[in-house]
Length: 80
Image 1 (cartoon, one colour):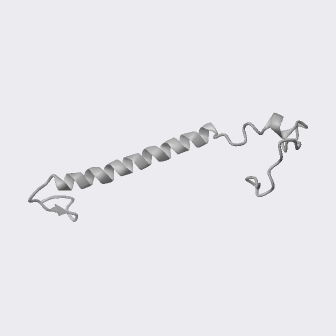
Image 2 (tube, rainbow, N blue to C red; image 1 turned 180 degrees about the vertical axis):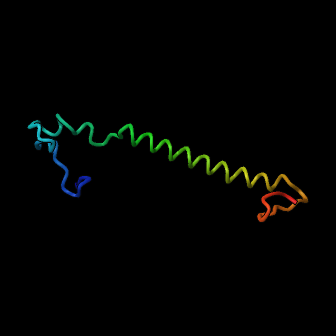
Image 3 (cartoon, helix red, strand yellow; image 1 turned 60 degrees about the vertical axis):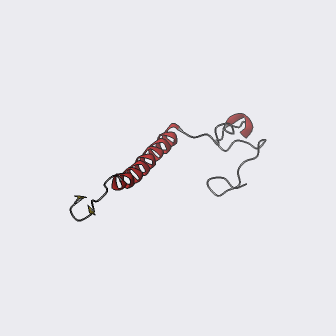
């Protein structure tokens, strides 16, 4: 299995690549697949921005349906 650098990932019983001399399973294997707090924050920001975009898209579509007999003017940015 290739690791993030393109090299083969160390096996459970191989020496840890950090140079500690310990086996990989006893050193860094537990933290290899976990998300860092920074990546969790970026993911939360991405979800929030996506949710706001979806809300905006669907709320503007419903606003147009609530105006019978009126026409939206994209040029002026309001209903006529």
